[in-house]
Amino acid sequence: MWNVYFAEVFSEKGAHSTSSGQGFDVVIGNPPYVQVRAVAKELQKEYLNCNYYKHAKGGRLNLYQFFVPLSLFLTKKSGIICLITQNSILAEDTAINTRKYIFNNSRLVEFVSFPERDDKNKRVFEGVKMSVAISMFQKIHNNQANNRFTVKTYAERKMLNMFSIRISKDDVIAIYPDKMIIPMAKKSSWELLKKFRKTKNIIKFKAYAGEIDITKYSELFNESIGIRVYTGAQ
Image (cartoon, rainbow, N blue to C red; front, side, top):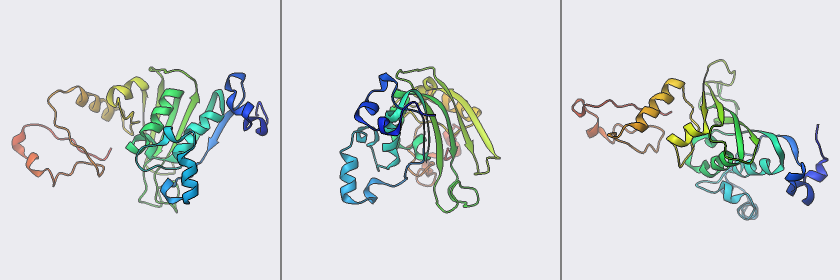
């Protein structure tokens, strides 16, 4: 299956000579989901001093964020990468640099999101209270603004209840130019969000807990304001 031996891929010659065709055709990984601050001090130093820190830094660093650029580094040109990580890779501020690296260094293929984390019978890993995502992208060194990809969102691990959208890098950058958020949304919701973004007279709130705190901003939510209010965790 591989074009080269493991020893050559991890050698100075193999790992750094992507133009010569060295590297894996496919990289599949399930990297650790652990915050850097939770590992031993000496190991923390190694992560913070490694070549991939600049692509992972931002907020609470998680180990999986270092494995995204590493996987691209080990893959040959046009190779495929498939990773299962925390769902935070899709939208959280802590993963902004990780998303930017993926956007700028690959062709996006598909993202599959499993946001459920509270119901152990529905979440992917029954024994771990965590939502996860499967990311698939291809190592191509150019900015394909019109690169179209699919985002699927499942309500539970049996993959019976799903909605999806087909969007492009252009679509994401137009709505989220700084954060490049990959939406877990139905097509109708995505179209509505695009309309919001084009509206000039709109009130915006920062939602730190997943959705708008209507109690905190109660004076703004009454029948006399004369505008519609849309809320929701997604």
